[in-house]
Length: 504
Image 1 (cartoon, rainbow, N blue to C red):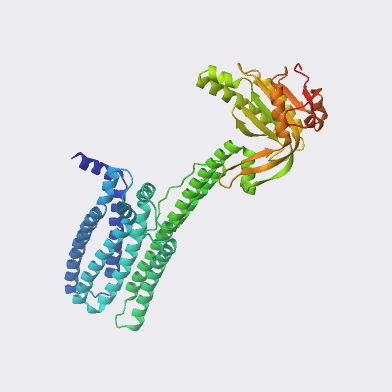
Image 2 (cartoon, rainbow, N blue to C red):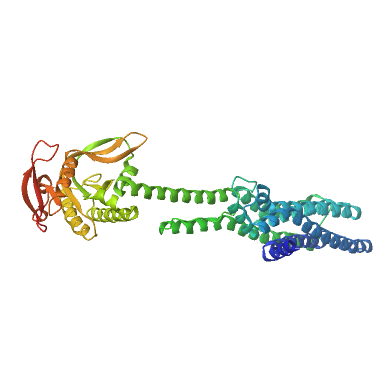
């Protein structure tokens, strides 16, 4: 009982009552036009027997209209039963339920066409028994009206049930269906709105000129007037329906593209058609989904390898190999991280490392450098690769001084920073299946050794004169030269420099 009440409530709140009422009204108007054409447009003589037959035909006409309405509603209930079950149940529709929702207007229009054909046969037989000469004219009139009503009810029903089709297509999977395409609909609009009424007028003229069935001037004028009015109304309505089927999705896609241009990434359009238009809507949604996925991948890629490396990979590709570049290298390492890891809870160690690396990334980014890698509790930053920077040594030295100042504000953190500059090989190193962008060369080794030495100096920052020499004068004034030392693994001595703002 509750299911029945829910079904009734859903039916009343849905578009089904409007759909069924519009179908019945369209067929009723078509029948009235046919009746008016036969009654006033054909040359029917006025005598007592004809008047009696006409009264009989009016009753038959009314009874058949009532019968056709009942059949139309009954067949609609049967064909739409699965759609109603799906709407009551909720969730994605099955394949048969999806097709029932999409094809409801076409199937209902076919039912109307069959009813028109049956009614046409009945009235053609009735006319043939009274006036055999008018039987063909009645048959042609009913056939033309049946075709027009079929096309009109189909296109009107499809427009009214667009939300139902959109729901079915959005919840279920989309593939090519039996829905007529844009070309078919345009041809249907021309055929039903222009061709058929014009053919009717030509047939009237041919009948008047070549047969014994002669129309009176009044009858011919009324017949042609009715066909012209029908052509005007039918062509206008069908043109509006066809235009909306094309312009609505275009307007919808235009608005969606404008949102994309404004920076929105999660943009989707409603799919309400199973023809080329629906495939266009589905294609846009899939394109946006792919673009959103690629944006996420680029973001993740950039977070792992750095934004500059990610942009370079997207622009030039990712091939193994490198090139010789002049770079400045900044190496920063924590002091006593091993002891801290053994004495502190793991959560505190992780928080300390995250604070440390956050400051390193922020400072290096502000100086347009590239944090190449995190090695345990150390970080390697490159200036001058992958993007060329003629002021790479100046940026690296300035970043080292700023980094020293900001890292002192983190409680319990002690660091060593080393800066060097020179020629190095920068590029993708590894295998085809797994590689990374890195820098290899003497400046990297020297910066690493300077970092180890800086841990035991008061300033905690050391640079080589190879970096200081290529920096601008303003940055050079911030540094003082110190002693020369022999760093481990190097053949020649390194002349040290340290910031003037910190004790040496």
